Length: 329
Image 1 (cartoon, rainbow, N blue to C red):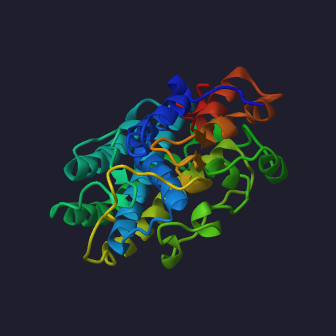
Image 2: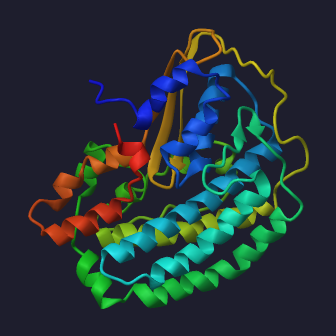
């Protein structure tokens, strides 16, 4: 069964455009994690064409994917706290850090939200000289900000009352519903594609997969907070390991993959984000399909909210962290 085509018919429009022209479409699917969407799509095309990505480009991709995760979780947790009844102060604190990350995106590719930065075979531009110092400065100051968040929020009686024990889903039901990302890990399932099916060299870096115990809104919030710490841990390793060399593989402007099919996936901030492509040998995909985590995670909202109150439903929806571009079909 096909429930419909992705927001503004992107999946059908993509079948009339070249493989490179489709990269900006992926920015708009999840506009809070454009770097992750770019990466997942480029991995699918590279798998279809058997393209090897240079080591420098691989680490640049991880660098921006983890910065994107931090920025996305800042939005997710900040707005979730608002849904629980807080005024805007925690959100503004988290937006402060998100803006610094968007500044780094802008200094590298000229865009802040819809970045269009990844390319088949690498990335569009090499790192500017000021980027790595900015990342190191961010890594130095971010732990102090996280401590402030935790002191302000973890024991906050309103947050605990509104989120703990609310919107629960157990591990078995979460797996059966094909949930992924922090929603799945909040139920105690330690599944992370960066560990289970590594891409772009994630297997060379040390990090843990945070999990919850109760599968409720509070645990999903805690998992995202812990994932920010793990992203900082990955970034510290990446900035010290980025080699010199080319940032993109030299490919023809006109990409013509051999007939075949490919599926590639990444651990986006919201979970498993995958792209399925079929090539008939032409310049555009014969079939372009996106597996968006927001749509799949949202499918369990009914089970999470049965027996609760209307206000509980608002908090539960906030804890899922959806992006409308991924669910509008």
